Image 1 (cartoon, rainbow, N blue to C red):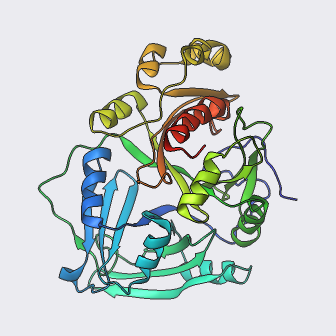
Image 2 (spheres, helix red, strand yellow):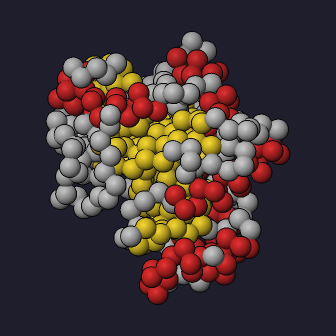
Image 3 (cartoon, rainbow, N blue to C red):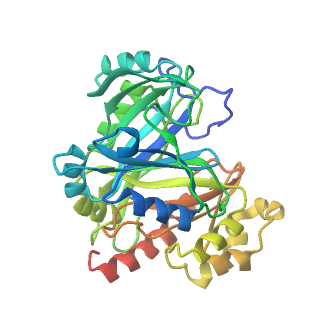
Length: 386
């Protein structure tokens, strides 16, 4: 049985009870997508989400296998990689899954130790510890597989002063739209198949020393038509949080089943990115063409004062502004949070983004699940996949 911690302190000085310290993680280093056309994908993320040109690797840098564009916004780094030949293993990934997240890279002090500690606990190796050098110093990287074909790469960069990694150069561009206020990755959610959630919960506990501090079952997360189960995993300092979802039996097909069908396996469902001003951020994203899930009914916004309770007196946002932008609100004992979810950003109904602003709340918007899932189900109905 996994340990469950119902209330946690996310302060960096606080180690979760039950978490192990053999794998200290300093944060998310980057997230790498495999995409069919990295140049065009980079333009989309710059234009729509306000990312900035940061680094590049490709033919011009001596890379004959792939072209990779690195985008940055505050502490978020996205790497968009595309193959340069038909025999590239990236093509196999794209043919099966479509565009999606391949690598969740984690910043560590010692990538060799991270690899040794996780593989001896049962992790399947993806990349042996490798020293990469150039005139700016050296980076050590290693990697292991997690659910599906997704991998964690451990990045040790304390002896490196270059722009990103060896083999990359600064990417200079005349086109850099203004950022929209995205700050850092709050959490990343993985979808796994039927009956696999507890297997991966145990994997994160045993292999990476994470703890399961929050759980939701199909009695809590359901609508008239669909349901799912979810457990939230976190490392010891709370900087890395990975909720894991699996489908649950219901009258019709859940969003998790739809994802598994179209992604053809387990993978990253969504990336939650934090902002300090969700109203400003979402207004800018909408103006740039980012599409969000349809709004909940009027009754949802009428009920906000009751749901927030004593937190209402501290709420700075105007409910009518939140409603105009379809932003959701939830609360826990620590405070409240605001969140909104994009529609899938691929043609396959797979990966999407969450925009989140925490005003003290440590949870994941459980009070919004019903309204959120009903919005998703309306979209599924339009796609004919409900």
